[in-house]
Image (cartoon, rainbow, N blue to C red):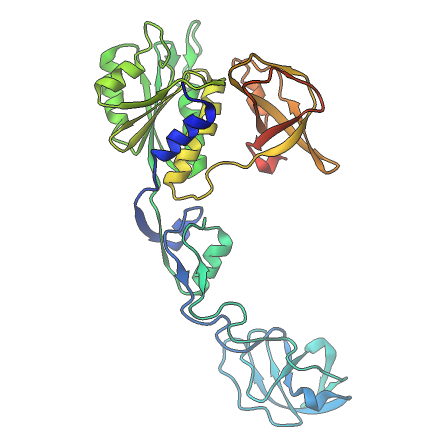
Length: 400
């Protein structure tokens, strides 16, 4: 049985970024760029005015000056004739700077009347002018390979005329729930039956990663149903199952996967919850078998499946960083296994405080609603007291 760290390393060693595809620029949002993109021209393309005002010579405005207005250049037009000494040309924001001009005086600092503009000097050179290439130089890499494309990157690429981008393909993730006790979401409750919340929650987590969920439904506790559903699942880029992975009489998942040619990389991890976790490969297709308990299933997805999907999507940073937090509640655990504690993090007076999200039984789904972080408690320590420092990574940074 691998340790928690060994299991995650084995997973990441056995997955790789998918092939690339070219998509329309807007479709690239939240995707990972697979090429360096350089600017084909300078930005700005020419010297232009940063304000509505008057293009002048600074030398003409060292004292109060009255300058004749000899032209008008709105944004989007060609540059006017060269500026003559003792004159001014009215310009709008974004308008090309006329030759001979070395500064722009804002409208609010001037008084125009009868074809002249009165300027209360002095004026400094190079003021309120955006110079050619001062933002981005021609040939400069504006977005590097491996970058996650956000609106700022989309804006920069659009400004450089890029209408398509080369990104890593999004994996299709087949999701299968198993068990005779399950009923579909939306069916009325029946005594002895359980709504299949795992399928939809795992699909939501897959979509949140940026991958494409494919819900296969429920495999009943017989070989024929398992083989039918799992054969479909193994055609996807990634296959994720929940329940049926332990050692009970009706836990058929590992047996059927083996019969379908899935090679086991590991089974069982020294963690709680989530110990009965399986990871294997069918050729290059990663196969994750998660516990059936919804809380354990979500936690194992967070710790093992999410990093694998992010790597397949081309992300370079696939593990969430830890924060040191001060525990606020006493905790006891058994030795020998890492304990993953659901916590509520708060940032108060410059430090992170970690409160237990509630009773830590894996049957308490409500603790996942209250938690915004997962604390990893070391395997060899059994008693944790308020004031102890622990390692926590955030589940939902926007909630803190």
